[in-house]
Amino acid sequence: MFEDFFNVVKKRFNDSDDEYKPPMFKCPRCQATNPLSKYEELHRVCPSCNYHGRLSARERIAITVDRESFKEFDADMKSGNPIDFPEYNEKQEQLRENTGLNDAVVTGTALIKGSPVVIGVMDSRYMMGSMGSVVGEKITRAFEYATKNNLPVVMFTAAGGARMQEGIVSLMQMAKTSGAVKFHSDSGGLYITVLTDPTTGGVTASFASLGDIIIAEPKVLIGFAGRRVIESTIKQRLPDDFQLAEFMFEKGFVDMIVERKKMRSVLSHLLKLHGFDKKEV
Amino acid sequence: MSEKKTAWERMQLVHTSGRPTVRDYIPLIFTDFYEMHGDRFYGDDKAVMGGIARLDGRPVTIIAQVKGRDLNENKACNFAMPHPEGYRKALRLAKQAEKFHRPVICFIDTPGAFCGIAAEERGMGEAIAKNISEFMTLRTPVVSIILGEAGSGGALALGVCDELAMLENAQYSILSPRGFASILWKDASREKEASEIMRINAEDMVRLGVAEAIIEEPLGGAHNDLDKISENIKEYLSQKIPEKCQKDIDVLLKERYTKFRKIGEFIE
Picture (cartoon, rainbow over the protein chains, first blue to last red):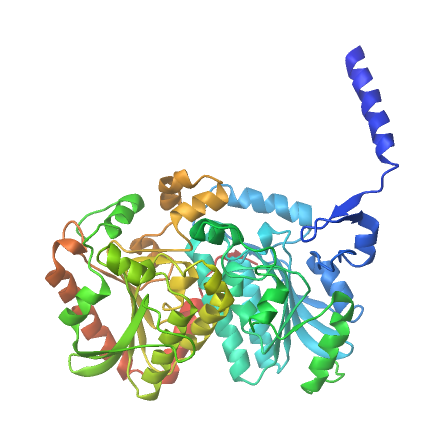
């Protein structure tokens, strides 16, 4: 009893000690440590190396589209459990509570400096942004809506790949979404992809790589196979810049690398260059 | 079906040395086969082969992932793990088939796309994505058959088709059970457990709407009777190819998209 009290006092004492140190952000790219407040102030960009960190879908929408212009599609859609994967439902319940999301993508219509778009934003906090039935269906519907209404699509990708807990059903979402992108493209639709951290696996091998224009944020991870998988296959350590946005840009798979603070205006210009001027949706 | 086996047992079977590969089947199913090479951009990937042949006299395009029959052959074809140029070769031949109104027959047999530096540098993600989206609107019938293993996007790149058949013991998975166990449970040794949980057998694929047909294997597996299994594959193709060729292409394309469009389980 007395010991407990002592521990509580000790813990409080230590806690108050911590208050003198501001919370810090350690960059996963350059390993530099900076005050978290500085990183947050820059909308999660590393002050030392310009690595563009991860945003939630809601935060991304807030800094990208015109205020109060976002109208969400399929907000209540939730995943089933197609291969009866143990504890999949429970895990999702918990994630819904923690993230306030129903799955790993938010889709809808919005205006970007007045230009109407269909927008999709993936959120890596929800099962690593992986694509299962809900992500596949929502993205497919977003493209079908855009095709029907002659709207451009802007898609912010962030994904670990296909969702393993849905087995082969996840793999089929690659075909479904790519099909919807193809029909949108064949109808003359404009599709701009913005690759954010991280874009890998089955998402890279489907709709993320099919944009008419492919933009990436600085220093984000882009690839098909995971770094660890490649290292274990070839039995050697990969260079630090392997699969970063700048690497994919050099290899010819990215049109431009755009900083977060300029993203909204770059997107707006590109939309207007394709004739999508101010219009009500 | 001849016998019920667990996913793990089937996995051992498709890895049995002596299981026939596409090179064993081609002379027994087709005539006048001419192999074509190269993607016209970078090189000729030996993990993917393709060419023109006749099926019951009708010209067809064949595209296949190639497994070796021994270690030397396997080294030459990279254990059927394609690089991006393999998928680009496949797409080139598919487009050629479309131009000359030949149906396409894909034989899938791969652990997955190759994971390596060069594969990433040459855009594996882009190559697979491109195949998936282009095959979705390819204006000629496409029938795919999984011969042994079909792993991840590397298999799907030849799997966007009007009808997918699987040999009885063949398996289709999002990644290898070993990779699955290693990522999800951080323990690759639990691959047997993963193989059962993942639902990767042909019956699972039919139930989930991923595959439409199962081609019966001889007792004990395809390697026990090459003539018989070739005959079964040929019988399937001889029925399906004319059936698909008779359909109006726009109807066929609509059905092709619908097949994938409806896969998924969600609540609104």
